Image 1 (cartoon, rainbow, N blue to C red):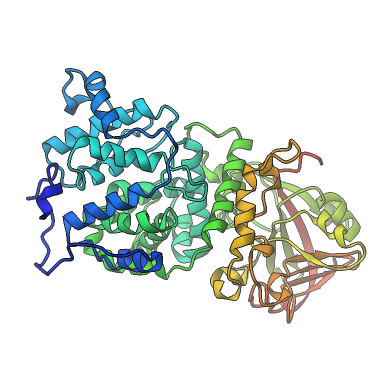
Image 2 (tube, one colour):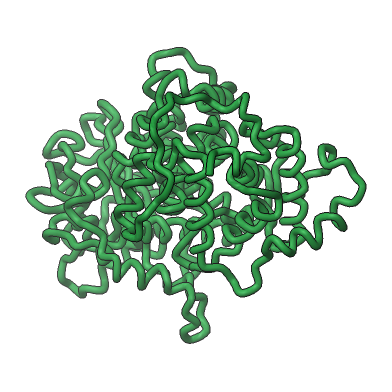
Length: 556
């Protein structure tokens, strides 16, 4: 069987020619780890027919709901849906955005087939409300299908996957938007240099990141997207995050130091991805992608679910204009004695995406409420998360993003004990800017995720319990119980008593504040692996605590 057996819809003159090397004809592999390595190495990439066989085998193994449209359904409905209309002029379904369908070296028959298949999918999957990646998926799989009906069945199986732990394609605006938020969270943690550039040159970094799926399924050249799809079909959705983060890293490497205009950042990224062959090969792109040591799949699933819940609480479930992140910190009504509007916006770019669209709300300041730890707790308890800002008598500025309600300190009675999650981080703004995140983020080998616990938490949304919303019982993203930590010093995020406040612990403390909120000290600590945030011992000039409006505890 040669490559043309599955090439009915391919314009072979447009296909990139490769050096003629002996290519494998069959794939005899049942071990998942071996299959994963073969996919990453591009074992079936040089043989069109072998790739077709592998795709069909992998797609047939996808667990699907009982009634999933197959090839015979397509043959039954396509004539009724398309009718006598010219397929080239067929309208796209509403769940597809208005961008041009990627042709991926398809011939005229293939280009027409894409629209027909999309319309039939729309007929058979009425629950799909937003799926911008679908045209690319159909165009790609047409390369490896013997006819339209076979392609329709393959796409249908991907859409009908009913494995709760296997996310394949976003099919609603809520799922798509939460994926964009999750990508933003990951970019802020794993691509700090590129993320800093995006924040500096774009009016709204969230809007830039909303294109992350388009980079992969729309702008990426065919030879690249097929290599990504090879691995995606074996390893799942997490691969897409990895590759998009790698694209961001390469873009930063190429563009760093060059003048950039904020209005052109999205366009520049799109053009970079379209012309990526000028900068990096498919092999190097995947190599960079898999060098990024992301959280576990279960941990990312928890983050995605938390982002979805935050969007639902804000009423953002259907497509609407994205709020500019800069509007969260209004220049005309934001007043702080410690940071400027620009500095607060920079901090806002660091915090988790599900809080970044909220407005800052001042809870406590010593200039108004006095230097009293009891008043600090009185005004801060009931709010989660919070942002702590400190200005020293030497005009140094530092602080911390604290993921958990200070009321949690009461769980241990009068005993000082640590709480919080891995989303906590500490930072300094003056004299220079530096952020320090949980040590496990940069060194995941120090706390390999406990899959059984994360799996239990991720599946908690399927429980019905005592009538409460299961999402309310969802284990927090980066909860320490998900990780097999070598010692407690790696998870000493925040602690408070009547005597002091401590942020970060283990062989030192990132921040220690006394009961009168007059004096403090800072040093390296194991939790954040930070340098001192200011002078090692300091006098507090001003302290402020900010909450996130619209994310306040409703019981407050």
